[in-house]
Image 1 (cartoon, rainbow, N blue to C red):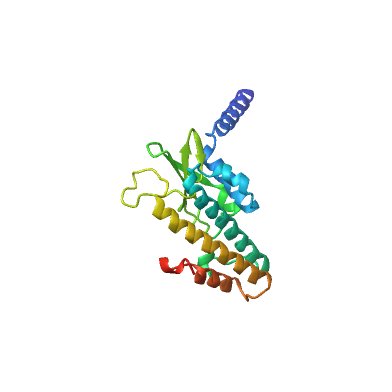
Image 2: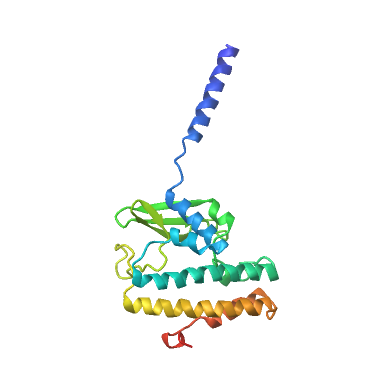
Length: 219
């Protein structure tokens, strides 16, 4: 009887192990997003270009400027932390979500797939709340998933898939990204010269550089 009981315990343990091994594989959109984050951190433009959504020729300059902006934002965050130490997001909320997600943020990602739109909504765990309320999107093209840099969402109808920006939108996006790229490069230069006293001052300079009206973009 003792042998039979031991046998059943062994079988139960084996079945539990098999159930754990049979967990569904991670969605491809999640893997692609992690690869994109790694490429932005590394400043690897060629790798990023393979992970962002392919766009038509008129949109390519906009996308290139936005890719540079992502890289510079990440560089600014890392340089700030290197100089002033880890940022307390509870005290400096404006830094929360700046740059790319941390390794901890990337550990637990959930995906909601909207097949009709060919869109995947990725939900990251918010370190401040513990909930999966930080959202980013991926788009599907030819059975592959891409980061939708430069694509636009229809504010009047969220049931429409992301689209390429029209000529007027492209102009505004390019002006904005180009201006912010110049401004961040200037802030990085000031940071390297130790002209800031805290991470809060760095963020203040970043916010001051942001255009608040169309007329300021050309300045």
